[in-house]
Image (cartoon, rainbow over all chains, first blue to last red):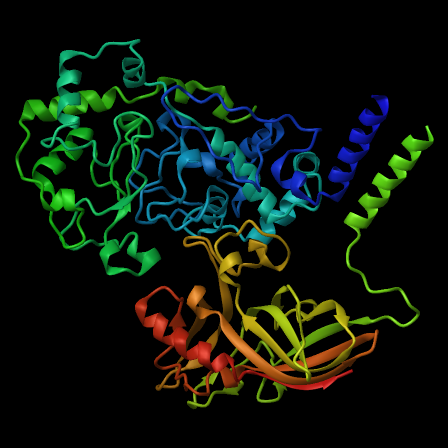
Length: 348
Length: 249
């Protein structure tokens, strides 16, 4: 019996000795603590890319970087400068100003439940959460850094060389390590505990107005639900032209695909925390939720690349009370815990 | 106990056998060698200098080079008997940086190679993620971050327009369709040692044939528009004629 046991041990040893780097890519080093997600009920499971396993240390490093001015060319701004925790990690202005005091033409997107998205930015140009990271760092209208400089600065910083060595097991710090660390932190930002979630779990009740809003949300008259799922992520992650303009000033998704059918299409945003993320639309043109619902009632256009649901949508289907009821419902999508969760706050 | 030991040796023996890679037999004469490929970035025989509007293309445009960088990948060597050896390289060439003008191919089987084939750019499998190290590290500024993908070739500088006024010349060439194939007859005899193959890159050939590129028509191309895609098709064809074999040392 002992012999057989011995044989089995040696055989197992044989197998592991043949194994190539697989362990490096699928598991984190034993010196690290695996990061365990606490996914709110109602949100789907999370897929972690094989090349970026999550560790508590990696997430902490990513958070430090997220809030560190070292990422900007002149040391004045960081990711958190425009992604404000109190506003679901969106900005409060129509457009965000970068380190040179200039701004672009698209509104800073909120940052939560990004673990569920496959592509990033309003037009989906970034191929992964990791790839998204270097966009704002390099963009001249944002942090305006030369990546080579950022990497030099990080490698000259004792704290960062220690932490990167711990998390990735090697030095020097490379761009891919920076991308992975920040993505690890961003992946942890989850939001799924709004009043509406509690209602769906039978732990809260909606007011009469909110309930009327829910009926409209899920009806053809309101017709929110086709793109903004009822609960869960509250987005279909698709790109749609919602009829903002007859001729879009910003070509949107077309810029990425060069496909005429994509002119004026932008990513469907999640409606979670929507009351916190004003102003609205990719260009921040609407100041209030009432403005948004009124737009879908009377203000939309029907350009060729508009979504079929917009093309067939009738004008003036909602009364003023209906608009108020939908807005009341939208306000139940706010997760107050997101703003106060210290796991996401600037490290002291 | 003897039985146990036997079992142990058998198992370990099997382990080593199973793990052993295919290696050339270690006789006194090595059966493989090393090829270093060096790229000489030139305009019609002159090494590229990063100053002044010193160059004139086939269309008669005077121009300068302030930046010239490109990716070269999957260097494939062919012997006269048709057997091939393929390197798995992704190499960034930078005309302004002497440390970024060559790459090394190890374990090349001995023999006379008379053809080299390679690609300008980054292949599809590597072109849609910046989470990569080595020459594909995004810090080399050869990646589009707003639309994840590598810039295969960059030429920046100035050109003189029809009024003799200097204008910006910006060519950022890329996207999956842009991957260009280059074939160059070479001559290198690998005999277990290291050989250096010198290849010339002639920037003027890129703007010459089969498609003449006039900078008055094309001068600010970022591979972002449908108009750029016509320019991409032209450069892609021209790349085939931009490299030539210089010598082996």
